[in-house]
Picture (cartoon, helix red, strand yellow):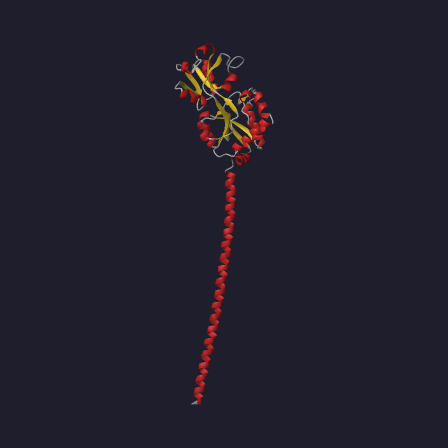
Amino acid sequence: MKKILALMLAMVMAFALAACGSGGQQASADAASDDASANDASSEQADAASANDTSSEASAADTSTDASADSDLEYVKGKGTLVIGITDFEPMDYKDESGEWIGFDADMAKAFAESIGVQAEFVEIDWDNKILELDGKTIDCVWNGMTLTDEVKSSMSCSNPYCNNAQIVIVPSDKADQYQDTDSLSDLTFAVEAGSAGEEQVSALSLNYTSVKAQADALMEVAAGTSDAAVIDSLMAAAMVGEGTSYDNLTYTVGLNSEEYGVGFRKGSDLTQALNDFFAASYADGSMQQAAETYKVQAALIEQ
């Protein structure tokens, strides 16, 4: 009987030891599993942190790219040219005998382009489409004795005004005494540049007119007798109408308004401030006045 009890006790102890051993192995396995889970979590956190860093770097790069893309000045520097929309308009933009563009605006545009490290490129445009040309980036600015009208100022980023001007009536010299005020103009047919301040003036006065491509074309219309009169800029009239000019049989009579010239860039362009700074510097050092004297527009120059 004692032997039987001793055997049973031995068996119980054996089972107990086996159970303890199994529990220890399970605990060890569970601990290893927990360690592995902790390592996985740590790895995931590291990956997330790395991803966030990469995302931040990419975001910073994108912001830098966007800032560069928003800069008209950097865009122009990148392509190496400032493309200037103009028409043939003496004394502001016109060609010399060799075919080079000269004039007060042309000379100032070349000097500005050089100041920002690029070349000036002149492109003749349809004046009526100047805003479309600018927004479409076929040109970078409109610099051509452009009157700062409400439409221009609402559609472009405009420089400070640099010249005074007026819209004036051009008629044959032998008829000038008949047309000395606005009331006398009602029976005339006018030629005016499409999209110009001149067209705006004759339209406001409800006068009969035909739109032509350029102010020079309006003068040709009057000289040829196909229009009774034209309305053009006073600065152009001073250079092209009267004794000693190409149109010595024409003269100017009635002034319709007073206005100012400015240069137009795309809305929000940082080129506008760059040009204002250039105007101030060139006025201060006298180079702006010297260019104005070359083309006899010094009386119209506005202090910068």
